[in-house]
Image 1: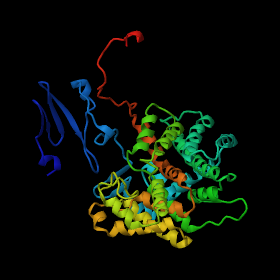
Image 2 (image 1 turned 30 degrees about the vertical axis):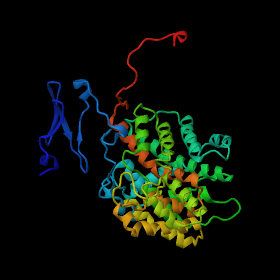
Image 3 (image 1 turned 180 degrees about the horizontal axis):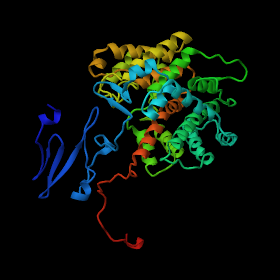
Image 4 (image 1 turned 120 degrees about the vertical axis):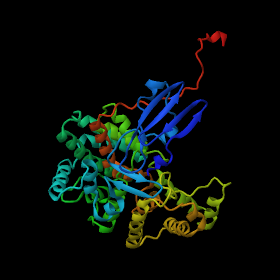
Length: 448
């Protein structure tokens, strides 16, 4: 028996108005009239109530601050179960994808819906490499920014500027044009991320190398120094590959919803992605791994007494919170954290790094995994905790962490934009419940 059957004819009373819920519809009795709204089935997870006619029929709207209970679209791309700690890309468990796949294959999967054959993979990889360069004029735009500019501001601006060099609108009815736009975006964006990093370090920019994989190419562009031979470290490449895979998509989060909202106005792909970059910049979204390192540095500066800060975190009267523990969506262990923990351990062991802040991180991890308080509240280390550790170990500045996040999230953004356009989703236009001043007449300034 379905969950809804157990609660068939469930009543919610509001004065004399109420809702009746059954297996396939919801009946709203309001103001002496009855209205039916169909249940929309899902493959996994929550079913929905289609209320698209609610306002026209009743004059009512729903109020859902933060859209926590509102489905804005139908999607085939990603599904997560926060209670069970599960994440799927196109139906594939993230554990299998991270273990057996690579970032280029994941990009193809998200964009096209299926894992590629060998020929499809080769063709896709080669098509990206066709655009493994950025116009010289883009360097002039990069030069205008001071080194003190935040990397995410630089990246958002450069991404938006791509529109000027690729002004033709994408014909969403043409598979060839959609694929071309996606492959071009994937190729160019990795350059913009690498060049943004080089700008912060005062280093000359590097160009792409088509003999390398997507991740290896980015690694070389970002970290190759001008005065010494570049050595491709497979441990680092593997860790970066895993991080990018784990960040590739995550349902309708803030930045993804932003990309879809902006794109719903038939805004171009590059401008829509630029909007997503800006949304990701927020400290409540993509800046979480940066907050982890800043917390570790604060504890180190205070003397490094981990127990002191753990006790502060347990104290309900104290405003201090441990960053990188627990998750808004996952009420269990973040499945991505289980995977990236090993990569973090491998990086620290391989590089032999001596870093007090990272030592503190390992002490905090031990506490969170063993202390009854953290275990009972399921405050486990999340993906931001471990990704911050890896980026710190690689010597990447904390303000660059969100740029790395954006590089990983790019294929998800493109896939969501593509899906939204192919589905013909209407332009996004949320409603509001107005609670301001009532209608009133203008009063001249002399009479106020």
